Length: 308
Image (cartoon, rainbow, N blue to C red; front, top):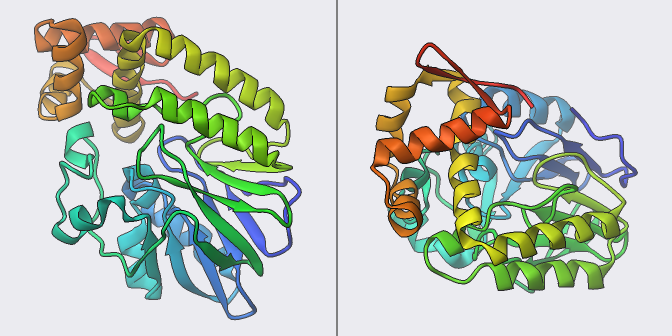
């Protein structure tokens, strides 16, 4: 759906389902436009239709990625082919994109997909992008992803927050799964957003919102609970990745799900570091927890997604 929140006339926000990130279209002038984040590859046709309709005859000249998780950049390749748009991204994974190392890019590691693309320019944290007749500062946003940026427009006090802040939380803290620091960085990110005091936040997922203080308070409480129990964070990451896959396939035999996830490095890391169960038991337990929370159903040996 297209957000009806108070936006400058040069902006459109496409609020997507949780399989794809939200997309932000900014009209640079009467002839050209920039898209921030391009969704997941399974939603490519819908992304293309949304963008083409909203362009109103303009040309899509740039795609800006806040980070390179598959749900934020999966439409890059198609939109590049259709419009010839330049692709801009943060610098952290430049070499992995050049060589298309899908382990470093985490697509293989999470059991997800992304069509191969190549970037045209890098967005250095601290730099400014001119989009939608406004200046947007790229700010480093580690925590959820150490290479992520958020985009801040001081004139209208609008923050494109990617997965650093949602109305009811934030993205999974993946660095902690790899044995790296993530909680402290996410805490600093929430403090930075509070200092910026945005009027409006456009998150990577969910509706745009203006009750920023309430969102920050909820996020802080959640973060402290996760930091107090890294095992809890690991369980939530595993369940979030399983739910993501089920959003795409809708339903699957439980045995087939176990085999699919067996090849995804993140699940092996989580199990070996935190639980040390036989792999099948670890996945079955995670699915059972999703089912008890109402996120999925178990039917005759099949796992069925339940829409949120």
